[in-house]
Each structure stands twice: as C-alpha cells, then as structure tokens.
Amino acid sequence: MKAIVQDVYGPADVLELRDIDKPAVGDRDVLVRVRAAGVDAGVWHLMTGQPYALRLGYGFRGPRNPVRGMDVAGHVEAVGSKVTRFQVGDEVFGACKGSFAEYACARQDRLAPMPVNLTFEQAAAVPMSAFTALQAVRDKGRVQEGQKVLVIGAAGGVGTFAVQLAKMYGADVTGVSRTAKTDLVRSIGADDVIDYTREDFADGRRRYDVILDIGGNRSLSHLRRALTPAGTLVIVGGEDGGRWLGGTERLLRAALLSPFTGQKLLSLISAEREEDLRFLTELLEAGKIKPVVDRTYPLAEVADAIRHLHEGRVRGKVVITV
Image 1 (cartoon, rainbow, N blue to C red):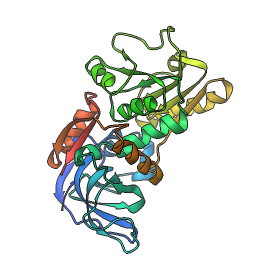
Image 2 (image 1 turned 135 degrees about the vertical axis):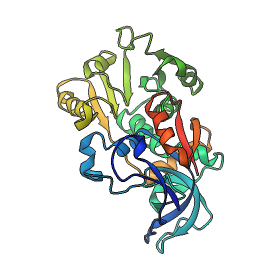
Image 3 (image 1 turned 45 degrees about the vertical axis):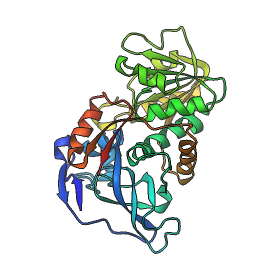
Image 4 (image 1 turned 60 degrees about the vertical axis):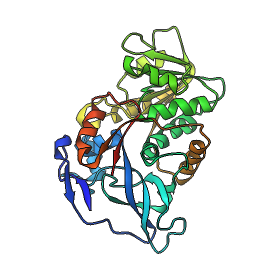
C-alpha cells in the first residue's frame, strides 16, 4: 500500500510517499480502507519531534511508528477474530495510528459507525479535534447555561468544535481569532468575536467564567486578567516554552499556581474515549455540531497540507483524501 512515511524527525520535507506493507490486524483490531484523514497540530509535533520531551514516548532518534495521521474515515476492510461491532464494508470513523495511508489499523473501541449525514472528508475532520473540544468544554471547563465563555483559537480545528459545544451547553460564547477568520467564528454560533490583531480581550472591560486557550502562547497573568475571580482557565496545548518542553512549561506553572488562587487553572491532555465518540456521533447526526473543512489535499501532498496548517491560515480542519 502507499503511505506517507518518515524515518527521522524534522520539517515536512522528511515525509515521503512510499509503498509499504499493510498493517497487521490484531484480534481486537479493525483494518480500515482509508478514504480521508484529518490533519491537526499533533501531527506536526510528532513529525518534528518537538517538544523534545515527547520523544521519550514516541522514539528518541526517530518515530517508532513511521506513518503519520490519527483521524480516519473509511470502509472496514478486515476485522480481527474478537471484533464484534463491525464487519467488512461498514463505513467508520475514529482515531488510529498511521491514517496517512491507503490502509490503517484501529482498535474497535476507537471507531464508530460514520454519521449518516457526513461525507468521509467531514467525518475525518472530527475525531481528535472534537475529542479535545468536548473534554475541554464539558469535563474541564464544566460549562453551564448562562456562563460567559471565551474561546481563544476559535477558528481552528478544536476551536470550531469548542464554540459549538459551549453554545450547546447554553453559554454566551465569545471567540478570539484573526481578522480573516472572524466571519467563520460568527457563522458557527459565537455571540461575539474579538479580532486579536485589533483588540485585547484582557483589557479589563469584560470578564469570563470560563476561558479555553487553545494552542496559545499568552502568559498566565494575561489570561487571568480576563477571568472572573472564581473562573476556570483550561489550557489546551500551547506553542510556548521552546523546543525542550513546549507548552508543557506553561501547564506546569498553572498547576503550581492554581491551589493558591480562587481561579481554577487547569490543563487538558485529551483522551480517545469510546463513549465520547458515540456521544459526538449523536450530536453530529442531530445537527447540533458540524465539522468545518478548510480544504482537502491528496495523499501525495501531505507535506503541503502540514505546511498550510503550521502557517496558521487554516479555517477549521485540513483533510487528506485517499
């Protein structure tokens, strides 16, 4: 099969389109014929091996799994002997390792039947970003009806879902984005939009019960100025801290400070949960949330897709078609 492979960490130039063997199918695994695969910030971090701390879990000199990609949507090609939920031909979506390929192997509890109202491209834009948004809004932020919620990075893959989910839970939502993306943030239901190139959300005029800082690099002191005295800050990733620790440095500072203030300063490392994927499927089929696809690239152009993502111009999610 054809797949996007890397032998060493580095920029997008390290990615190569090669012919490799299909992945082996374990007893509880599902082999998926990939139709589409999502691109998110995690793909860039695993490709570059940055921050360096992540190499402890993924391979020090090079990635143990050389095929990138985590979001997947496609057809079931084969199932393991202990798989009971799927059969050959089913349309599925979910999370796996190595979805930038013609075939990918996933655990059956990381997949769900594809929502009937989505295309493969739309379904592939959902899993990792929507997992993160749901767990940030519902589990960490505990967003409730009537609260004022600020979503920083509202036009990205995670942010577009976070805005919609916060609205679903009854919050008054303000999204933060750059000028070219404010129209998108309004279109997905934000009550207000702040263009961060023209306005500072922490200018003291407004305070928020919950702030979701998605992939940001703002200081804790800056974020806390926009938070109510008993508000909750949820840090979702981040690009500060340099090559060694990356965003984890700010997460550590938040954890140390939180016990000494009335504000909750929390961080999120999202998890791939079967029950969350089922819940998201229900929301998608009911039209309560929808994926936003910026553009699609063919498999051979994964490197260009990742470059486009890293430049910060993406509105929603970039998707690879296979």
